[in-house]
Amino acid sequence: MRIVQGIGAFGLAMFLLAGCQQQHSAAPTTAKVEPIKVEQMLLGPEAAGGALTPPTTDKPLAVSISTSGTARDAQLLARLIRLSDGQTVAQASKKVTFSGPGVTALEFSAPTGWNAGRHLIEVTIDGRLGAQRDVDFVTPEQVAPAAAGSAR
Image 1 (spheres, helix red, strand yellow):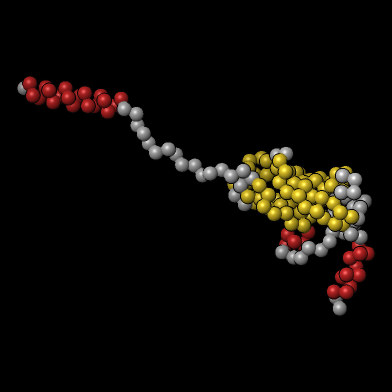
Image 2: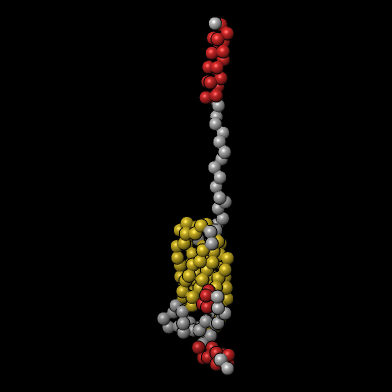
């Protein structure tokens, strides 16, 4: 009878010790979160897989911004800056949420047209510089002779 009580006390002690030990489960695995970044900026027909033609002063400029990473309600801002005087002549922004690759389409338009010459497109995400690209606006007359020559 004494042996049975000893085993019973030992079993009870083991049961209590097991209950006091911390349970170590595997840590939950989470995917690595990559901050959003600009991978590519395409202008006008480039976004549709075509060749870049110089944007003209009389038409809006479409911009396609490809990004990668993860963002929730990030502010994507694109500014068009005239390089001759540093003035911002247009800007467009969107709130974006991505988990992986994404594309954001923006358009710059000017009711009275653009000044001919070199401009800079600057893209920021939540205030951090994401990309820059130069673009030269030409007058429609400058494009017409080139188009006529290629049609022959």
